[in-house]
Length: 487
Image 1: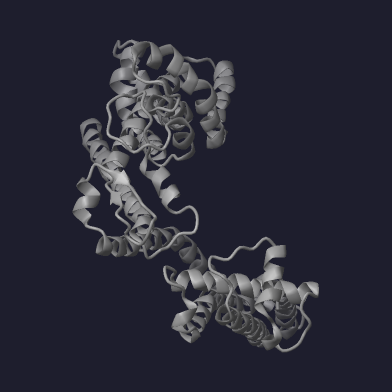
Image 2 (image 1 turned 180 degrees about the vertical axis):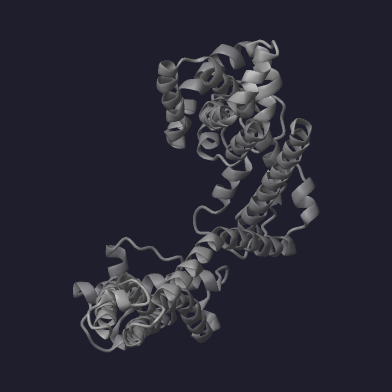
C-alpha cells in the first residue's frame, strides 16, 4: 500500500478518535461539560494522540529498518559470482534496486503480465529500464534479475504488513482512548505530558543531527585512514587523485586545499568585515530613519541572491576585469579564474551577514550608555569607538564568525571564480581550489565507497568541521575576555 494512503487512513482514524473521545466524555457526565475534569478538547486531543502517535512511531521505525534488513537479506542470498571484479556489494545492490523499480514499472505499464516472476528475462527487463532512461552500473545478469524479483516481491509484502500493523495500532489506540474518556479522567495532564515529550524530542533533533553527522564522518574517515597513511594526508603538498583502481597511486595531500580555502576566505573577510561593520555603524548611529528603511533592505537583498548567480558574476564580469586590469599588465597571470576573483565576489556576498547582525547588535546597546558617554563630554565618534563597539563586541564577533564559516563552506563561487587547481601559491591571480570543491568532485559520479579516492571526501569534511569548531572556540574566548573587561 502506498505511504500516502497509509497516512490518509491514519489521519481519518485520528479525526474519528478525536470526535468520538470528546463526545463520549461529554456523554459520561450527562452533557454537562462543567462536571468534566478537563475541557472537552483535551479528551479529543487525547484520543487523536493515542491513535496517531504509536502508529506514526511504528511507521517511522519500520521505514528506517525495512530497507536495511531487506537489503542485508538480499545480499546474503547473492552468490559471489554476482559481484563482478572491480565492483562492490553496494554497487550491485544499487542495481538490484533499480531493476526492482523497473519490474514494478513494467507491471504498472502492462509491459509484463501478472504471473510468475520467474518468466521475466533479462532482455525484457533491460528494455523497460532503457525506455525509462535507467542505467545500471554493471551488466544485467540472471543473478541480479532474480535478486531484484525477490527484492520487489518482499518489498511489496512488507509494505502491506507495515500498513496493516500501523492501522491496527491506530485502531487499538483510538479504542483505548475512547474507553478512557470518562468524566474523572485527567485528560489535560496526559495531553500536556505528551506535548512536553514532543517539545523535548523537537529540541533534541538538532543535537542528535549534529551527533549523527559527526559520527558518520568519523566512521568513514577511520575507514579512509585504514587505507591511506594519515601523515601523507595531512602533510603532503600534492593533491592528485586517481580513479584507475582501488588505491590507484593517488596523492591525497590536504595542504593545497587548506591553503586555497584559507586564502580565499581571508580575502573575502578583508572585503566583507570592514564594509559590513562600517555600514552597520552608519545605519545605526548616523543614518536617518528614512534612509535606513531603504538602505538596510537593499543590503540584505545580497544575502538572498543564489550563489550560482554570484559564481556567474565572478566568471563573466569580475574575473575578466581583474585579468585585464591587473593580472596581465603586472605579469601575474592570464587566467580569469583566480583566488582574487572568488575572494572579492564572496566578500560581496558576505557583507549582509556582517552588516545586518552587527546593526541589530549595535541597536540593542542600551541608550543609557550612549547618553552617559555624551553627558561626560565624549563626541559621537568617541562614544562609538569606546562605548558602543566594545559593548556590542560579542555580537560583532559572532557576525564575523558566521561570515567566516559561510566563506569556508562556499562551493559554487569557488568552482566558477577560482577554478579547480590544487596548488600552493602566493599569487592571488592564480587559479586555486578549496576543500568543499574537492568534496563535491570526489563524490560525483559512480562512486566506490570502498576506495580511498571516495572516502577522502569524509576526511576532508571532518577536517573542515574541526577548523570551524576551532573558530567557534576562539571566538568564545575573545568574547569572554572582553566581557570581563566591560562588565
